[in-house]
Image (cartoon, rainbow, N blue to C red; front, side, top):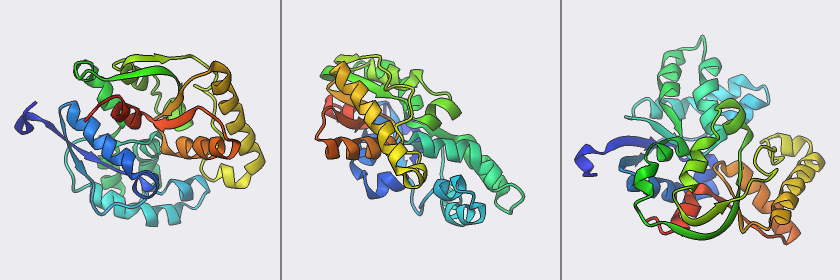
Length: 249
């Protein structure tokens, strides 16, 4: 699709993407471009405020999130978030967080434009399928809690994975179970958090998959760190990373 007719989208990198997983941010923009979108990386953004909000510190969450809100309100097109939990916070909870403040209208405007990454990619799955992507192996897809239970997104990431030749998605208990991260949950209840991660990794190992795929960097960071500590396989990677490994340029 020529650049002049491509749909402009704004990529919100998220804290983890910006600090811990910059490769995922780059892979996200390339995947969007390959699907005919014109991605622009958001500037002047920080955190969506989710950690503070989840802990009950609304005022602190607003103080953190308002810079991102103001920056995103100046952008055009859908706001694409390569993290289910951040997309949920921005799409569903920013309206409540900023209700009654001078930022309320901006929060409503921005929240209506927020889209989780795989939903946009799935809308152009037919285009992805023409790119000759190939990744021979088996994977388990892990649905993050916010993405599945708050946003109701389940089919879109699987449709994206379905465009990759040679890849088989194996149904396992990995899919709907919480990985144990939960942001501050892992700090408050580390023993429970580790046990939940181990259960997920055990399921993946029993299924003998080559990788666990997710669309949420928080889940990936938690499971990958635990896998490294255990000396486990399989790998744990973001869905945008898998597309890059499958040959998306």
